[in-house]
Image (cartoon, rainbow, N blue to C red; front, top):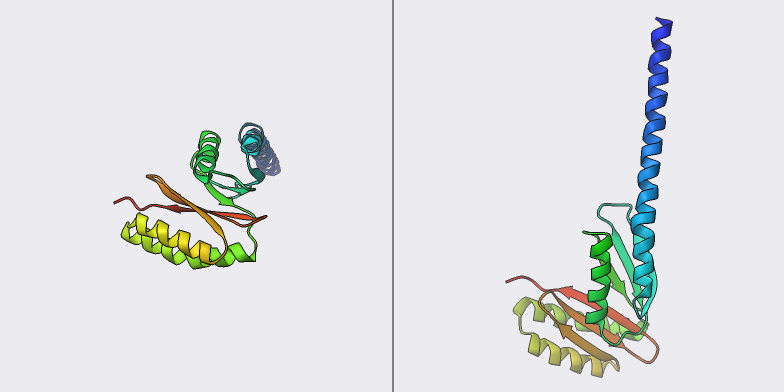
Length: 169
């Protein structure tokens, strides 16, 4: 009887050690094959200031902080290409460096953007956003493609970027 307990204990220790090695190898492979290369590629994209990867949940979130970029649509597409190539399924969160003026303007503009997305009247949305931004003393650039509406807000030293997914109709 005592011999059997030792066998079970030895088997349990061997199982725990094997699992620890396997999970350690999986983590190491993920770091060397996905996380580090992804972060390096994203940091090479012009305008990227900071990249933070959060893979604590599946499929993961990539946080990117941008400086001033002239074309948010192209920059976002470039970032999304890298993310999907190395971390397929991960979502991406893009932020800028807003100040109070830009944050207040963004809050005001969110209603016009929401109305434009809900109604599909993008021309009216664009003119309303541009006039409201001018009133708030912020430069606004708005882009649209089949997937998203891109809003960039600038003042002298700060910028903010917002990506709104379009509803498929």
